[in-house]
Image 1 (cartoon, rainbow, N blue to C red):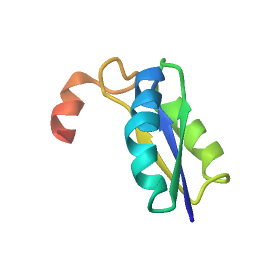
Image 2 (cartoon, rainbow, N blue to C red; image 1 turned 135 degrees about the vertical axis):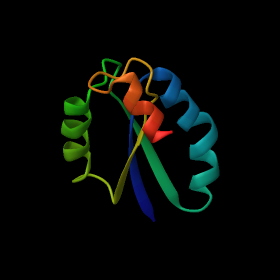
Image 3 (cartoon, rainbow, N blue to C red; image 1 turned 90 degrees about the vertical axis):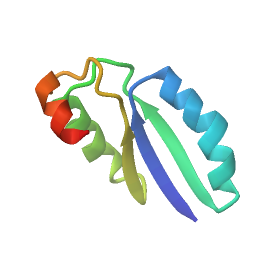
Length: 81
């Protein structure tokens, strides 16, 4: 059994994980839990959230979009993509 915590931006991402990813991965004994940050995403909040989650799960991941992400400039996203 593997437990994965996924820090997500909001309710849309939670819904996506619960409806599409969870049923598929549970058959493989991989249990994922979305943890919503309820918007207002920033680099500092993500860092804080991941530090909290890493003690409760085997693995931690994130699921955010860059639109409205505080702390990242638009020109920086071109390098990432």
